[in-house]
Every structure is written in C-alpha cells, then in structure tokens.
Amino acid sequence: MNSLGMSIGATQLVATDGNSDGVPVVRSSILTLHEDRLSEVGIPTEPGLALTGFVDRVGDPVGIVGADGSVHSADWAAAEAVRVMIADAAVVADFDTPPVLAAAVPAHWGAHSLAALRAAIDRVPALAPGGKPMKLVSDAHAALVSMGDRIPDRGVIVVCDFGGTGTSITLADTASNFDRIGDTVRHRDFSGQRIDQELLAQVLADLNQDPDGTASLGALTRLRDRCRAAKEHLSTDIATVVPVELPGATADVRLTRSELEDRIREPLAALISRVQETLEHNNIPPAGVSAVLTIGGGSGIPLITQQLSERLRCPIIAAPRPQLAAAFGAAILAGRPDETPSPEATMMRPVPTGEDTTKSPASAPMDTVESGLAWSEADTSPELEEFQDYSTPATAARPEVTFNPAPADYRDTDRMRWFQRPALWFLVATVFSAAVFTALFIAWQDRDDAPSPSMRPSTTTTAPSSPHP
Image (cartoon, rainbow, N blue to C red; front, side, top):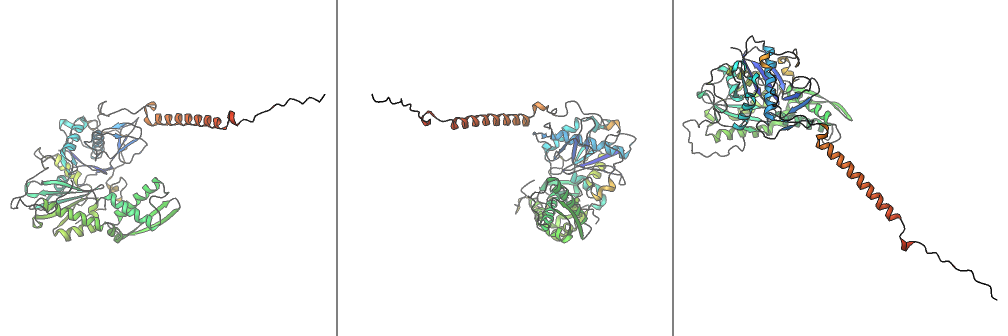
C-alpha cells in the first residue's frame, strides 16, 4: 500500500513516502498565494502574497492579515500548505495508485488546535484520496515509530524535539505502544531561532556594530541566515567563518564551536532542568527512564547529547535524520490499521504503576549515534539539499487526485480594493487636516500683522493762519 506522511512544524514542513530510501520534500513554513497560478510552499520562486506563522496560529479565531490587507484563517493556510506539500511529494514518489495519508502535528498542540486542523483538512477533497481521510498523529509518537527496534522495549522514553521556535518534551510509555504520559511541555527558551539571534549578537559585537543601529533590516536578515548556517556547520566542524556585508562593515568573522557552546550552555542547563521537573511532576524516577530520543535540528549539537547524558544518566538516541523522523513515522502510521493512537487518544495517560501518586512534585512545569546538522530549518539548508527535489516546479502538472481546487469560499476574504484600504483613507484625512490647519494658521498670521485702529498714526489738519489786519 502506498503511503505519504508529513510533519507540520512552525518553521519547516516535510513530506515523504514510507520507503526508507525515498526522497523527502522539505520546505520552509511559508505559503505564497498567486493571482495567476497555484499556491506554493517554501521560499517563493516568484513574488506573491506570503503567509507565515500559520502553524502556531491554528485554532486562532483571529485571521492572518496579508501584506495586501486580505485576511486568511490560519486553519485554511495550514490545510492549503499540507495540500501543496502532499501534491509535491506525490510527484516525487510517482505512485501508480492514490496513497494513504498521515500528518504529524506538534505534540504540544491542544485539542482545540487539533480539531481546527481536522475540520480544515476535511474540507479539502484532495487530502482524502480514495475516500480515506488523512490521519493526524503526534509528531513525538511518529518519531518513535520511525526508529523501529532502536527504541528500548521497556521503561519510559523522553522525546526531546529541538525545533526552530522551542523545544518540546514528551514522555512515552514503551509498554503501551508509546502512549503519552501527561502533557507535552513546550520550553520556548531553547530554540534554533534564539541561538541564531545569540550568534548574530556575537558577530555584531566582534565588529563593534550595534544591532539597533543603522544597518538595514534586509542586511541583518541575510547575516542572521549566515549565522544559522554557521551554527549548522559547527555541529561537525570546530570552526567556521561568517561573511559579513553591512553598510560600513565588510569582513569575515570566525566562530568556533566553543563559542557556540558558551552561548547555549546556560539555556541548555535550564532545559534539562525542565526535563527533570517534568519527570518528577509525573512521578517517574530517574531509574524509570530507559532512553532519551532527540529529534529536530538541535539534536546535531554535540553539547546537547553530552549534557543530557551526564545529567539524566541514560542512553541518548539521536535520530539518523532528525528533521525527517516525524514525517517518515507518519508515513509508516498512514498504512497501519485505524487502531493507531491519534494525538487525542495519547494526550493523557495515567502515571505508571508502582509510584506514589500522592507525591507532590517539587517543581511543576509552568507551560505547556548518528546526527545531522543543527536546526536545518530553511529550504537551502546544506544538510537538506540532497533530500530536496526542485526538478518539478510548482506550476507543473500534478496528479489530479492531489490537486483539486479548494472551494470558492475557502479563503476567508477577498483582497481589498484600493478604495477599501484603511491606510489610504487615513492618509487622505491626514493631508486634508494638514491643509486646513495651514490655511487657518496663515489667516491668523495675516490678522496679527494688520495694524489695529488704536495703533494707526493720527493725522491733524491745521488751518493756515490769516495775516493780521
């Protein structure tokens, strides 16, 4: 049976088939809409209306406002991105028959976000090929499935997903088909984007440049992308060079792995403390943890594996291709019977027996091997170039089963016409007010300059004196 799986991440989308030697489709989480052609996902090939941040906004009743003033539901944007990714992956896989589909969603999502995406996907006929709706599974569960027999068959597994916007901590019971124990904890203080920002600050400091100075936003964005690439290379190299091109500053800045580790050591320690608090909150002793599975780009940083091993005292298992683990696991789960646990079914599991359930945690969470490079989240990531397929452009023909157009009312609002734009009317009102104020000011000045009657010089007429007789 043919199957396709994908993972939905805040900064990266991945789609692949169920074959271990398949070629995955990897894209940044950017949906670009075009007037005269189909939508595309990833860094756009042509200018269009780009929507970002929709993964973290799924379930939000407030729509995403585009650059042209149009408003779009994040649920719709996510479903449309899934549709495009599945269509592209189907072209790469070249299936003879419609595949079964599954998508791995963030493990930290709540029931509301899951229901919102489920409703949006169900409105897209292309995502139910052959009448079989796409399954939604937890990305932590999918990653565990993708590892096969490399996962121990006893105890509790801690899944640490190092993502671009945060790290998710999930506890899974190996004795119960990887059912989740408690809630997934989202730790936002350790993420790929934050580390990129730290390296950017260090590069600017080395050049005596102020990040709030006169450098253009575009130049800083390009430099941050280069800092991300440097971070990825430092996963395997001990040093790398960051080319800097800023207004008034052009140089090559050398960064070392030790400098990267100095930047992340403190936030990493806080993250591991959060893992320990999560275990204690769920009444799981250190001896009950059989292994830690690391996925996501951050699992490629050697210091992370070292610190986890030293403090948790258990084996650390790194997925061979950490960015692809959840998508590959979803493809495997797509072809399994429907008894496969869904995210809703694995949302909460009782604490394992043998522990004192009345124990109060010392500190409860406040909110909810072979490795690759670190946090390879962009389309142009060096690690992922070999996995990408750009031979089929977004405008090429796709299998009809995966490319049905969306209903006419699927987009929330049409784009505003020029006379409907609030900014335009605000500008008109501002110009009109300025003109009226200027006219009144000039009139007032003219009135002040005119002499008043009391200040006008008096004129006295003297009659000529007559001669004496």
